Length: 130
Image (cartoon, rainbow, N blue to C red; front, side, top):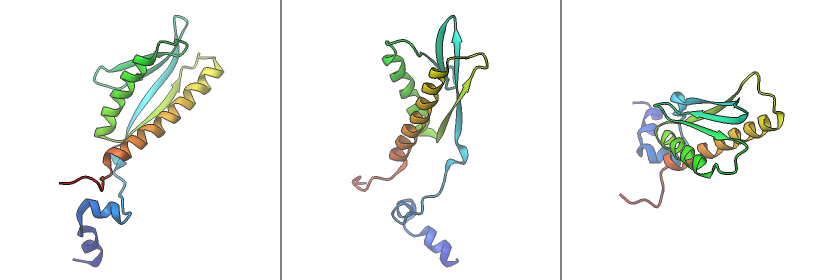
């Protein structure tokens, strides 16, 4: 066995983190397309998470808290399984520039939050005891 192989095997997964040798396991990163469109005069941000889970947020409604919470919980479940990235797809006929900008910013912030959650979930905690 080479010195490199020995170093890789020493200490297992926790040692990789301790030595800062975190290998990118995002080869199976899942991309979720979020649609922005108008339906019957309502500005919709639609998250199709697969397996029949579709979350539609009315961007002008003040009563979205439960819908946002439900959508975020479903995203967390996906993040536990694999790394995900949200991408925004704006309908060609959509013409509200302000809401386009808001949706783009929201998706960017949400990607950052999901990445932080994924890191927290997958990084070993030194305080954990076996």
